[in-house]
Amino acid sequence: MEQLKILVVDDEQRMRKLVKDFLSKQGFIVLEAGDGEQAVDIFFENNDIALVILDIMMPKMDGWEVCREIRQFSQVPIIMLTAKGDEKDELLGFELGVDEYITKPFSPKILVARVEAILRRTNALEEESVEMGGIYLDQSAHEVKLDGKPVELSFKEFELLTYFMNNQGVALSRERILNNVWNYDYFGDARTIDTHVKKLRSKLGEKGEYIKTIWGMGYKFEV
Image (tube, rainbow, N blue to C red):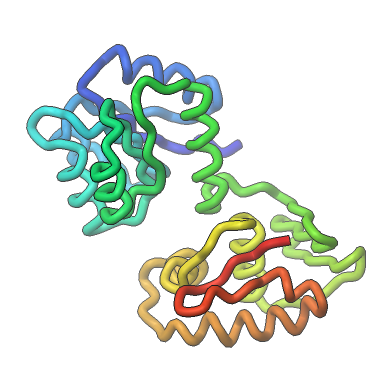
């Protein structure tokens, strides 16, 4: 597995060490920050951070401020840690674009599992091949088979199918699909997605039904 960088931000050194130990065992490179200001400095000094684990209650800058600062420039996945179980906190987190919300105390093993799930979902941890519902997709060979028979896809159709299959069962907005398949610097028309989805469904035949339309929002790939 490629060594991905994770930034762990918490003013409790003991907590940082606990999280770092578990993530390091899984092969991640862990950077640490003890307050919000230091977190922002480290984040912008390192342009290859794959995920941020962020405590809310911290000196200098709290987690919300750090999140807002990062979100102005990056869509890097963020997991928020908090001692509170307040629903308002959780809703604010999702409004700010937080990907996951974990209340202390938590199991470090569960945290690592959430980290790996998010990185798989955002394609940072890519599995070489995936098979579901009779669709076999090999990323390294850039090959797709339907019930064992090869099917020809364009480059963007292949990327779109890869993103759908890596996010099986997740409701995906058109904006999110644009950001992840066409990259964050793409400011085109969201109808581009609809056109590609239509072509992809056609090439997948009856398996095209796995790509379900969520009216007014986007799509969901569900087998």
